[in-house]
Image 1: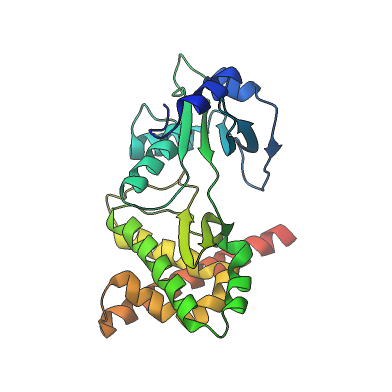
Image 2: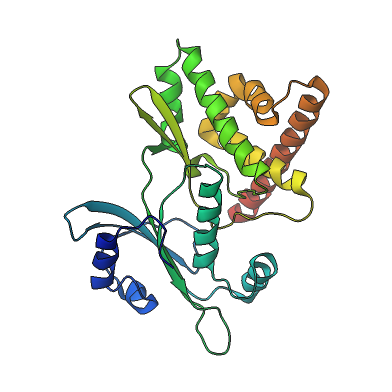
Length: 275
């Protein structure tokens, strides 16, 4: 699949490099691999191409080898039998863009559903988003605006609108950490881009439970804790879209309970790793 906004010149460039086929994508050995623990059967590669008319494009490719059976069954149950990890994220990107959420531009994806006739590999290429991930810039943003509460409040409202729009569209992110939201400031304007939609989905049941998990992940992210100490009440009020004191208390309690569980589980993992 090709993204709806991909130019013919970029398509031709990718085709010349073999990046319009699954064989070519897995043979591609340029760019810089982005490694982090826990990727498993996934690879992430950053690279730059110059298209047929001389425009440079900073791109990211995700390559998926055949996923474990448990992951496959879960994906088939959630998204359908014909899906692959690459196609799921591609469709998620298109869906949230239709809701007006800023995210990466989808460029191309291809894959083979894991069955008797295929190997289960897939890949996805997206364009880089502008700005810096909150994980890296939040402390600096707060320091720069220590005497400008209007800027921090504007950021908080923008962040609340992003999460509210995502959830009202029926989606949950499942990895809503500060590393997956990019802040772009330009000419007095502030935009937030949401990335890494590989695990996003529309839950059929227990939607509140999934939304609380997203909110807890966001608040629990280390660089966001200083922001949350002051601006979380404004965030949750804007997120809910109402100023109902009882409802605000219920949501705060739910999020705090989830954070407590996250800390407990992390502590248990740390203890096991230390043995």
